[in-house]
Image 1 (cartoon, rainbow, N blue to C red):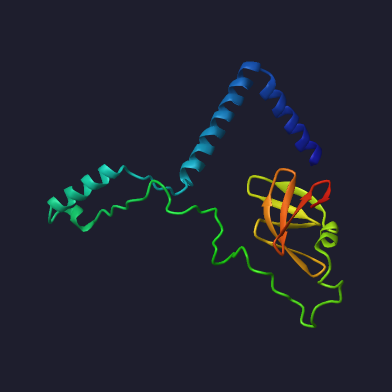
Image 2: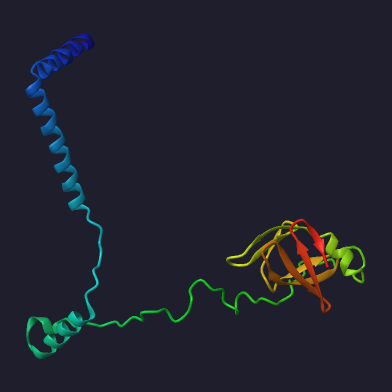
Amino acid sequence: MIERMGMVFRRLMIQLTADRRKFSVLCALLVLGLLFWARIIVIKNLPRTALAEDEIAAVEEHTESENSSGSENSAHTVRTVMLDSVPARDPFTLSGIWFPKNEEPALVSSDGPKLSRTSSEDPEQAISRLRLEAVMQGSPLAVISGRTYRPGDWVEVDGLKFVLLEVQRRSVLLEHGGRHFELRLNGPGT
């Protein structure tokens, strides 16, 4: 049975490909049919879109529908929506309500502070343990000892808190107790 089907299939392929001109016409018609079939599918499943009209045209339609009372168009009202050409606020800025800049981070530990070096330690010794790994100028960011900070964030090391004041090209400026410290990409500085 399978051999007979194979034989019929081979005979059909020989008949189709015997005349090159007829075979090329068949292939062209097949491709054309597939294109039309795809077009019908696309037309059948059109995405639903809305097109905006010009402001003047929408106002003209509104005045025409007011003038023709009792007509079929009077049941439909045209609503004109005026949009600002420039947004009122920058959508990419962070809200100061939800993301305050100068707040100290909350302590999450419930069993009190961990035992660490004394907080009365010299800030120069504490800053020497910090390592600046990367800086980004566009929206100022600094990676200090594996954590990412923005200007105004608190950088804590051994109980001492430094405020990140500024992100420069190859360094950052930190402040503690009125003193400024510069942390460079290749090492600490004062």
